[in-house]
Length: 88
Image (cartoon, rainbow, N blue to C red):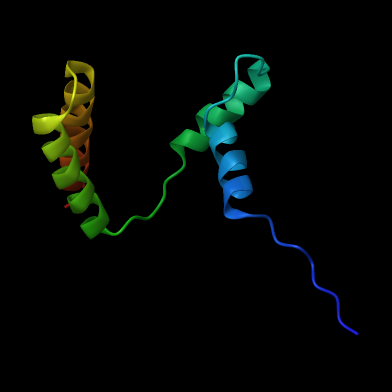
């Protein structure tokens, strides 16, 4: 007879990751500091993913439904493009 350990669902795992990066309003100062440090960690990302994200955000910046969405998409696309240039 074999037993298996239940694996967390992807939704559960994602929820824990998001709460690590974005603590709720009741988070302690230690939790907020941990979230800030987690956000600074370097993650390896294939440049093609960044290129695709920049293109999609550029399109959203042109066609977004409201000004805030368009502005946020344009700013994010510019930051991604700057990061790719810096990494070269």
